[in-house]
Length: 81
Image (cartoon, rainbow, N blue to C red; front, top):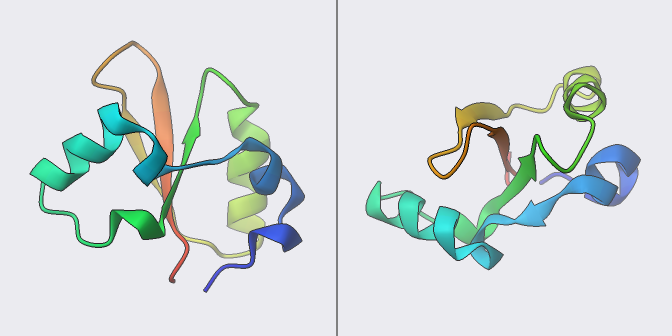
């Protein structure tokens, strides 16, 4: 499990997927299990490159997605990896 307190950039720039209805409902429809285990990081509210650099430097897997609501994008990070 990822300890986000040891990742200061991610810790300051994430939200929980389950707390974001527009996104959590999307992933529930796609049959994602355990959406409460996912963090979401939005490109419009953070320095995306800093977050990605931190994730890569700690070998943390993430996925990058286009936002279905805007022209922005976001990262999904499973904290149970």
